[in-house]
Length: 98
Image 1 (cartoon, rainbow, N blue to C red):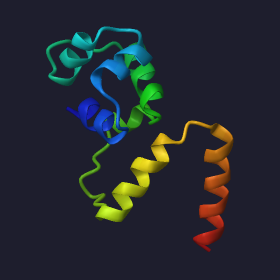
Image 2 (cartoon, rainbow, N blue to C red):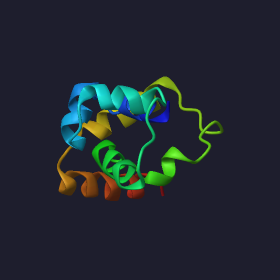
Image 3 (cartoon, helix red, strand yellow):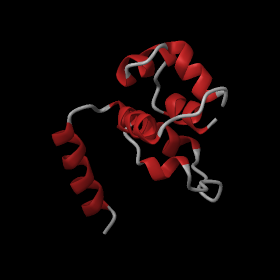
């Protein structure tokens, strides 16, 4: 279930995630519905494709509630693919948060 949520949060289809991971869309569907077990290696690849940490699959995020603008901001941020832009945005946010 968490794979599905992270995939949707990232704005990816099952087909696109499958392409990034190197499996079929049907395999992604099986992972999302817990019909197939996932190896730790494959879980690492999925996390990298979703631009999250593997630990995010296991941590309880129920205490983290985002409002609509925060959710929209995160979705837009995840669409930024350039690592240099990500780093620059991180620096900018650090300065703004002071």
